[in-house]
Length: 362
Image (cartoon, rainbow, N blue to C red; front, side):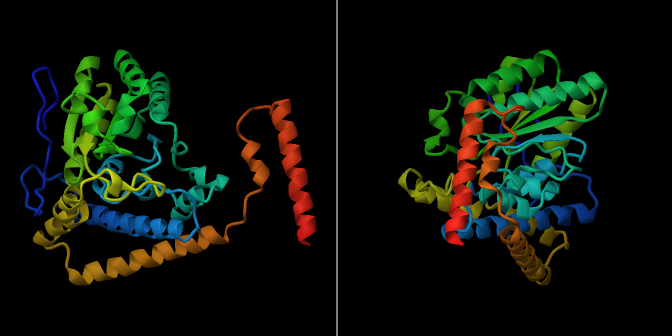
């Protein structure tokens, strides 16, 4: 694994080739951990495809698909512990579900239900951040707090390549560098910030080399190689825990679907590029080939996993759609400690109209 230093970009760190053959150091993990990551990737793809269909059916609201980025997410979250702090963007559902976030709550989030932003009490997961790059500053704050308290926990911020164009990105890296905060900045570079390609985001050859300017370590990894991602993230986490400071990781990956369900990628993305990533660099296919070559996987296990994943997602959909509906007035809650008079009037007005509407319906 090569750390960035002045003098030009380094190649992506990789453990597996596209055909599943080993070209790097395989992490020293028990067999069940290898299988566990694959199961999580298949479940995540099943969830993502179902969520996209639910949105098209009008059963959930706007949704940001993540298919194609399962290795980047599962590999990175696999290196974290439950006591670590996680600061996600809106495309981290694969990693969050693997980390323990319930699938039905992930669906509730896209339904606009407040419960969709509530992580289980045993997870240190902040609400999904829509404002681009803001969560990086929050992660630095949490990591710094852990440092001041003498805790071993680290903070991990997840974001896309578009976030590197925001001032918050640079402010977060600078502060983390100055105070050697135990935080990992994990960029999923999927090539596009909605319709804006990386080539229009920056003149830098890579995202990872931006770490040099802040005096911290930067690593570029093949984001479709789950083992390479795990190895890099594990190193970053251990470095942060031991007081070695922050790290910037650039996972080079690709989103196979639209930016969100409100987007049409065919208007700006080349079909040949999409087909190459879909057919030759799919992270799930690559990892399955690795497991099969090790004798850890076969067609019978694959069929059972696919069916099990469908049942799990079906159950999550049922739970989400059976969840009690939220009171519309909840939109005013949890914004201010004491609600301002103008918002209080708006809330009362909404509640009054809601009651009248129910009366008319009766």
